[in-house]
Image (cartoon, one colour):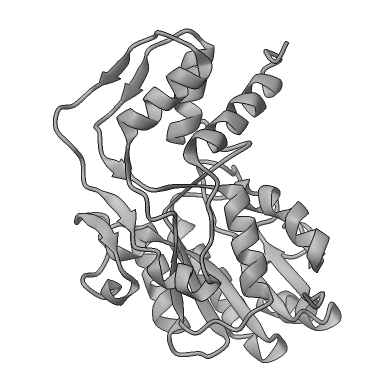
Length: 287
């Protein structure tokens, strides 16, 4: 693949940290910190794109007060749109931009069951995160230089403690029961797969404006917890805090698979195994 000059926003976040190495092996990668590039400064964004002759933008940055003290809940919606707009309005300076969207664009107040990209306008999302991502897609659809990569659930090394798989692993490491607020079907993809998918799109012209980036293999949260139990050889209980099932959150990845000519995702069990080893090392329990 031709070595493209790629700007990765959000390079210090969970996804950014995990895809940087793979991208840097195949691209001339630029992943500036907030101090090096203020994405809320439109002039600074245009200047950076020009000075570094950026060809492809991977927009992974997303203000999140849960994970970054520099962000606030009050400004999260506005800032996420402003950052996107600054990059979108500078599209005369690059060949293509891939925005990491979300399955939340399909409106999480409703069941999202193996949903296809063609159902993207079935309803307006009720949550501010999904609404912001949906507004971005409305703009993406109007430009040949833009593409929305809709991620459902992504996990791996260094994921936040609030994320379900990290929660399961840490419960086991502490010798505690695994708690689940309510069971539901999810679609979890290991972050190493996302890195490889991004590489594919950097080197290819997409046929569509949006793709569901997911495994297409729904699994219950309770089953994920059981896999963690088995891999960690623990007998601590799995406790469901509410009966029944919450709304499903899964996508149809047919469009992605057809575009890539078939892609073999890392198995959920192997991904969990890798994250267990990471968590053990991070907590000094790998001996």
